[in-house]
Image (cartoon, rainbow, N blue to C red; front, side, top):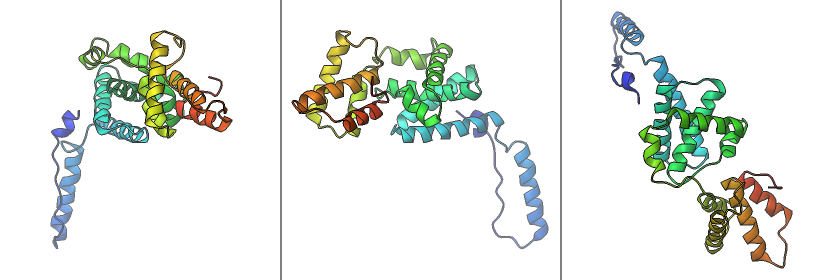
Length: 231
């Protein structure tokens, strides 16, 4: 990912020397060297900073190292074809994370990433569409698209239920209900996170019947799902 930087050389000064002239000459050589063959190219320094940003965001979203590395690879491939700036750069970074997470079966919603970057979900959605357009036909996209079903409400349920501290047996019931609703196209007009949140609420209501779920619990489900209370 850093071809030119990997070919750079480095000169290190000696830690201990009493000769002032030798020390001054050594630092002059080091400075001159850093300006020529020892310096990292600007575009690779910029890419390195973006990779650190990807790592930070993935850490906040509890995404493992393997998916982080795949997100970096996706971003690098797209950036080599078409570089971006401003909102386009944010869209490209978030798109690489979304695609890598989807391909690994642990998708993240645009709203989750929008909250971290303090932007609107439309920027993330637009960036993801552009990423698919740029990498259309590339093996990094097509190979995984053939292997994975991207993405369903069931992919979000485990993570949402874990945050809500819902028992495993109830989580399994929620998965079955969500899978059935998607199969019968009952919730065709809703996003996977919204379907997951709605299914959790319905199953919880049946589980606590005849008691009603209080508003605080509904707000928690909405917050975890990244949707409004009305949805």
